[in-house]
Amino acid sequence: MIRDQDIIQIKAPQITAADRLYLNQIMEGVKVTLSHMFFRPRRTVQYPEEKRTMNAGNYRGVHRLNRDPDGRVACVACFMCETACPAHCIHIVADESPWEDREKYPALFDIDELRCIYCGMCEEACPVDAIELTPHYEPVGRTRDEMIFDKEKLLEVYDQTKDIKPRKNPKITGYQGTGDRAKYDQLRARLREMTGDRESVAPAQASTREQGHR
Image (cartoon, rainbow, N blue to C red):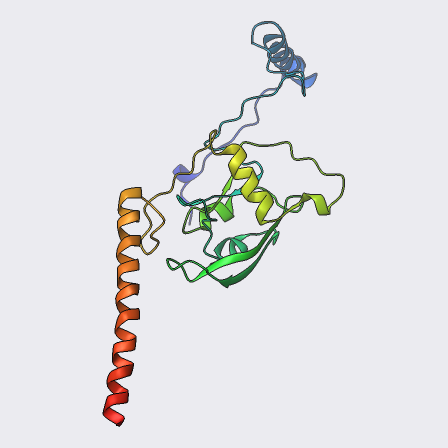
């Protein structure tokens, strides 16, 4: 049972003749238009003679593949970006890495720039800071194939934009190519020493087994 004191009476507002003709709303719109025309700086640029400077920190333009401190592609072919992409515009073919500090690397890495929605999910998903979106916003291609950027093209974009947007290269556990460069070099030297020790121990063990069989 609802009590009388809990009932809220709502009355319709009184509408004037000006409100019925939308005069107040029209005048508010004219006021905003005139303020932009005469009292605020114009933001229109004469493109392409003039180009707007984009915020390198948060603008999501053309993709790039970053290089590690040794100039190699930083990607480790983990497929995290391809999995996270909602537009399914990333295609990766992994291969065994020729370097000792990672298991895989991308033999092929393609991004369809026309299909991409530039949401930044690939950049967020990457565990090694290998893929980023850049302030570059004017890619040109006469065919669809020209707008499918392969690994070489993505690395070229990095070379063009690395001064505008340097790679962050944060320290990531399990990946030696991240973080402080001096520590990275020390880890690589230690890894080479360990690899050399294993290679020297293997022939000695083999000769010991042969002597035991004799």
